[in-house]
Amino acid sequence: MPSGVLQFVLFDNRMNPLSERLVFSKNYDNIQVEFKTDKATYEKREKVTVTFGVASSLRRVGNLSVAITDDEDYAIDESTTILSTLLLSSELKGYIENPAYYLQDNDESATALDYLMLTHGWRRYNIPEVVEGKYESPEIPFQESMAISGRVTGGIRNRPVSDREVLIMEKDGDFGFTATDVNGKFSFDNFEYPDSTSYFIQAVNNKGGTLVDLVLDQASFPKLCYAPQNLFAKQQIKDKETNDEDGIDAFLAKAGQRTQYDDDMRVIQLGEVEVTAPKIERKDEARLQYWQNTGSDITIRREEIERGPQISVTDLLRKVVGIQVSSEGYVYIRQGGRASLPLVLIDGFPVYWESEMKSLFESPVESVSINDVESIDIFKGANGAIFGVRGSGGAISITTKKGGDIVRSNKALNYVVYTPLGYQKPVEFYAPRYESLEAKYLTIPDYRTTIYWKPDIVVSEAGEAAFDFYTSDFPTTYSVVIEGLTTDGSIIRQVEKIVVDF
Image 1: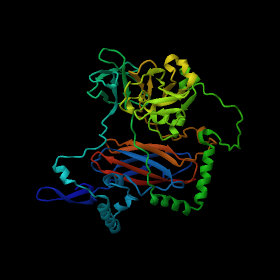
Image 2: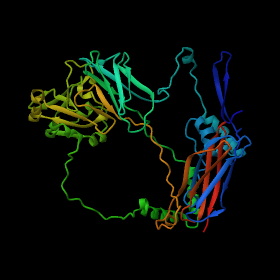
Image 3: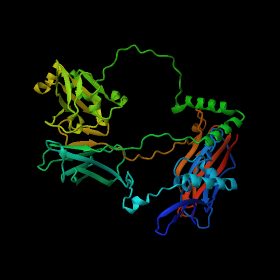
Image 4: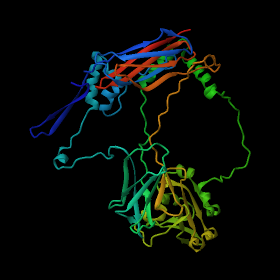
């Protein structure tokens, strides 16, 4: 029987599930690692060579991670381990405080584990809905690869444009095509891209013209939520600090010394500074590339947009004095006792009002998402005359982000340059190497608390692996936490000690 949470379901004679009972199987092998160092104790800034292997006759190959911390600074988190995460927490709903406690080999933990299965493992079955064939599907599909998707609209009423070709091209010349569906939607998927990769995406109408509007779907990310703190782990650290001879004061003193030498520079506390210089006008704003915006009456910048709760451009304009919004979504600028429809420009390109709008979303000011707006310039009265007769009723000039995800052309709305958030290139954990006498006797103190970390140690086919690092400047003990998996799914977790004494 495999390790972890097991499910037992009771059915009636029609095979309808009636109840469910979850149990935990403690049937996992404790794979041991043969841990060896080249010396019993070490001096400061001395090289430590570690070798280890999987202590099994099968020599199962696997990947391991190693984290080495200073015991004077950190207590190891024994409440959440690779065992408790893979075998327990990932299988149950809700927050579990100190999950590793339930996996201890004693009667008290075994009883508590059984109660945990009953309180965190309930399942609800809606049999009438299932019988009628009404199945629930996940709201968000599994992400099998990265994708860039969007929608193409056109015509007088800005309706979806179907069966139209959409081009995507990288800077290096690679390109591809897809077509829109009946709803005007398209998607480029089944490919990967690193961060900071830019794509040129273009759509055309059925005659090859540019009078279509291409709008990309915004990337969605999980909302920030409160992460419960493990009070058991915090108490462990507190006990460790207060039981030491020097206590927490020594830790704070060491942390203060460390900040003075970060990046090889001293940190000096300055007194109060009073700035008396005049305000510097921002001449590098994206809105100023359209020279007409210099004469606007009101400018709403990105920082002001982010402070408010508004969800659309129209919602933002409602709060501007002198602007009225009708129930159909028409935006009017009141001037000289009358209210007129203004000229709307997006990145300097005019977008016209429909003669009859049926919803807010047909408004030209809603041609761009508020998340893509960098600034909005509003022209009233005589200042709107800078646009000629078209600006007699005032003007609203919307400038989209130029350094963000979406950059639109100021001549057409049928193409964008898109820089999505791609995968991040891995950054190697920095650890100093005192290989020369000059480096070993450098006067800058070594105040590291995390001495070494490597998440991807690959065990050879012979079941062996090795790594090395250098100690810091303090006599102490290091905790070496080794975690990983073998190729057959066995979990490894082991804690070893290294002594630094001089």
